[in-house]
Image (cartoon, rainbow, N blue to C red):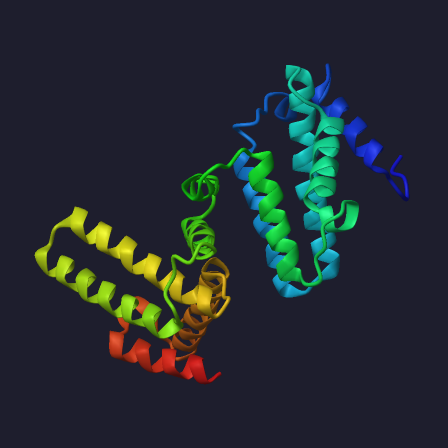
Length: 260
């Protein structure tokens, strides 16, 4: 019978049952590798509900994220590498060691001070001895826009950065010109290289206004879908389908969508 309220321990027991003899056939065959996509999906779905400001759905999605953590913990226990308690112990130790201004003798009067202390402790724990090591420590599994932002931010901390946003804008314009030249040459490898440089320069500009490009692009994608939906609905109301419309006709509806 379903209970009114469950605890973290209940979730761990449920996962053990699902993975155990006579449990769920699907759950029993999963591995750290097969679960990677679900961990990503659940995390992004939680972020979506944060953006939607929907507390009820956010609660549900955070539960899905927590399930993934417990799932990996159970697999680790079966393999003899780690378990849920090890995960909890590890993060507790990290929180204490990284917050030396709370649990130690350091001081931090502002959020910026906290980040400085955090980075200092992180470098010590991970034996990061050079600034290049710090750049390499940024996870390669991150989406490229997020990874480039973090890499640039670490480089900027030692002064390797443009003096102001206008210099960053000039770099974007320079890279755009080089991208155009590469397109004219019709060299696919060169085009890809210059497009990467252009995107990297745009990320650089985004840092100056403290905008995460990954999140900004995500919102633009949603906006595009909403406007495209308007075009399709408006076309259907006129008895038309998109395939039978000219680009000019669709562009007029797009402009209407922007006003709406």
